[in-house]
Amino acid sequence: MAIITAHSGCEGTETDSMESIDIALELGADAVEVDVRVDHEGILRISHNSVSQQEFLGKPTFREVLERVVPTGLMINCDIKEQKALYRTLDEAARAGLGKDRLILSGCTGPEQLARDRELKEQAKIFLNAEEVIKFIYFRQEIDFDMSRFSELMNDPWILIREKGEERQADYAAEAADLFRQLAPDAANISKTLLGTPLFDALRDSGIPFSVWTVKEPEIVRQCLDLDVLNITTRDVRQALDIRKGYLRSS
Image 1 (tube, rainbow, N blue to C red):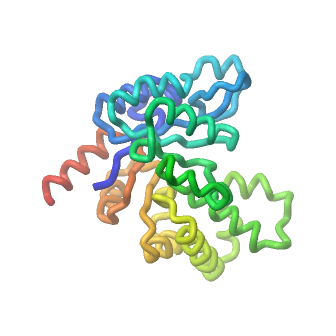
Image 2: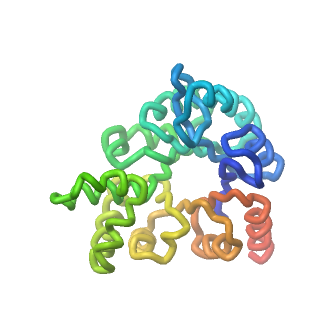
């Protein structure tokens, strides 16, 4: 059955808070998701957005999260928000005794990073974000790309692909599946909105495991369980655990 990962801010708690992690522990989630950045003084902190140093000081440090989570046996999904946080995260996790069995990397850990540093997959599970692959493919294919739309692509890598129609979407999907096969991450990390799209179908046909985020609707939790996805990331942890428990009983 799928891993249930508690998204930051689960069950109505504050985003980027220790309270969010505590409720995930209390409910029995399999993993917690944290957004990792480097503050202006070089300290790893849990923050979705880049903020002022004063605001960063109100965020938990990654070390504090490790101290809370490591003794429990939970996995930690580190959504790396900036490249400079990647190896610092690995170093701190290693010092805390976390290895591939409990450490997951997602976020901006992109295809070029995996191709350049194959040892990453020995240090952590890699949930490679599908949008990072799509960006990579788009820049490789679109020689005449209008750079004035760069921010648009970064915020929504699907928008420019959608404009090209279903046939071109299928081309991107096939190339993305091939790149996933070459890089061999532990899972393709996809938005729930991609379920049933040409990209999803191409990846599924290739045998790539899936991690799906951020799932709220019970019918999508059930859909993910029916599809045997590897991981479901959700803010509604109690609901997802209850649905999974029902599946376990029926099996």
